[in-house]
Length: 372
Ligand code: SF4
Ligand code: SF4
Image 1: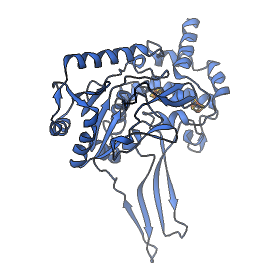
Image 2 (image 1 turned 90 degrees about the horizontal axis):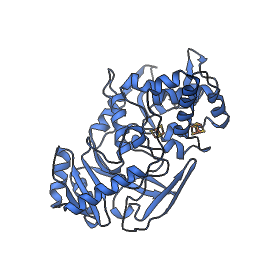
Image 3 (image 1 turned 90 degrees about the vertical axis):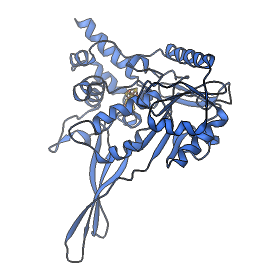
Image 4 (image 1 turned 30 degrees about the horizontal axis):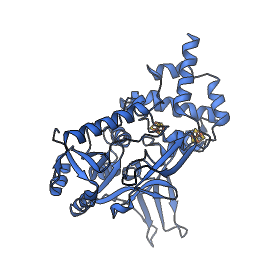
């Protein structure tokens, strides 16, 4: 959808919130909680992380003040992506109850899906959600829970002008700017946002705000900021056919070397916006009268997740890390036609021992180059 760009001054943000609320959306937005930026219910724009930036490095995350206290999006990303809005970390799929005659009754639990507007999703989060769409709703089997939430999600992307040292969306074939599939996309300047409308739903929200067109200088400044942000990223994934390169290294000693550092803690998979491994299990009530069948996020770093027909097929950390990396960067494309990595850098930041996917992939691929 090609529309002219508009300008929303900072003090009009609350009008955007009101417009969304009046249209029936619950707003979710970034805010500082317990020393980290998280997405939570946003009732007031004062909850946004004004004047905050994040300092990230392998295994490190700190918040600090920005030079401009008037900016709300001078940070890169927090531990959470927007994944939990559509793919819940825990939910009940069905419930079974037993009546006094011992008869069992099974009941499917419908997903709770209300209209939600996410304000401040990053372009990498949006890219990850498009990958999750392929996993959950574009294949042969649709996940009704994911689909119900996804269809009611309104996305306000805020383009990334302050990538962290761990971000590498550009080096993962992405961009600091969202190009499509959003409802609204905004780029923050000193005094407000250059706004692009990406959908009819976005148009109906924005036209209630009576915004002025963005000036040429404002559009140019936004473009310059995004260009500088893209240029500032130093990490990247190796080029070429990563699946072939990694498959040629299945027996590399490098996997064992990584396993000496990796704690199999699952952090990388929990923060990753595209990881979708989950398990299902039953939680019976103590009185034996009912039981809930639940779906929980799982991880390829757990022993249980590789249990097939009572055998554990990945019985050590080296095999689990290999599974994660090769699926994410290689075989994902066979399944979903895309890489499983959008370069958000979260797995690097939140790995307690600072294992860096870009460095490990580069080392494995260069090992293969050398052995040719
Ligand atoms: S693998 Fe790491 S960098 Fe890539 S999308 Fe997942 S968390 Fe982000
Ligand atoms: S790579 Fe890091 S975050 Fe992932 S399981 Fe190993 S120690 Fe945990």
